[in-house]
Image: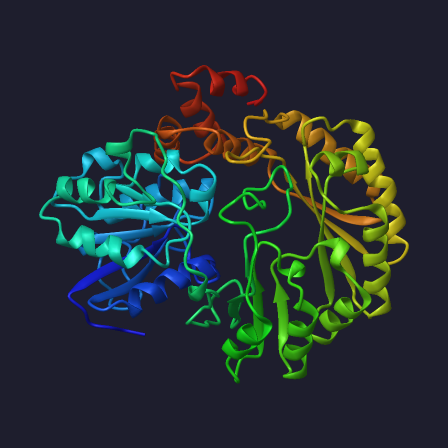
Length: 474
């Protein structure tokens, strides 16, 4: 995949290689830059053994082994808030000043984009010179050319500030432009590289739809985001899958809402492919669909429960009903699957212990049909959603409700929850601005522990994080 061209870009992911190469968005921008005349792209990742506040290997590109600091242009792909810490680690290891105002014409120009731009990229603005908002594949090459053509960093900032869909923190001062929407002719995204070293090992990734037609109140990619749901024709999806691909990942915010999804999965199963899907809605799990998934190698049926009770799910505007989840369990068992895995959030606004108890009762009933595993995350309100600004439930509240679930389901279901403490860190960054980004830098350089983040947030001049810290125990 090497290419020689006058303008070289270091496409960088602030997490290790396995995560970066499992990102379809990262691979799509790699392809866009490689296909652009006069441009070439080399990939760079956070070292596998990198630890916050500790010395790390100098980051080099995968293609040529060139040090990251040697590039004139760095393009960062950032998926979510906690990857800000990886940016600090990357730049510190590379010897590049992490804060944008500390860089001058001797240093690389840092451009960023990725899924984070659909919610709140303001904390990212502490570290990068410019941010491409939204879908970047149609405009990233022109933006890189504008940077290259500028005679100085200041000229590049001015040029990009005049371009649509580009946020320049030093020029726009917190006023975000609209998000780019690529021409439908550029859909779908697909991954040019398959590797055994990615989290999605040896899997060919292809997009079957973009966006979502649903209105879930917590979700950044709801129907009001960037034109809603855009469908890729089934024949187009199938034509892109290489003949030698044996593992195929179907990607999108609402894959199971594709009107031809059963046909797509069945056709790939007929080829002998194992098929993975990024999102399954329980109300879409029909008998033909689950049968096709079983033929395509699924041993676990994974879907979203989202809220702990019917009342909570209705508040989230989720369509998942008890009968849908019950039917999913029955279909998984009927087609010889080993278990049902359900994702849900706790700490949703308005949730009470009674809702958790309702979850225990429902999951207990489901476990009589098939073994059940729960993947639980704390609710974290995001910008650009109806639940923007909702407070974090509290670390102690999240932990107590998680323990209530574990006690109630002991011996009946496998209950695994992500950290309530790191959920709190994510929430502060998701609701914050550049000041919170700079606090993250302080925390990472102090070792990156929860205590380090808490101390850094406590020093912020704004009142909101300090109020939130009142519910964050030591």
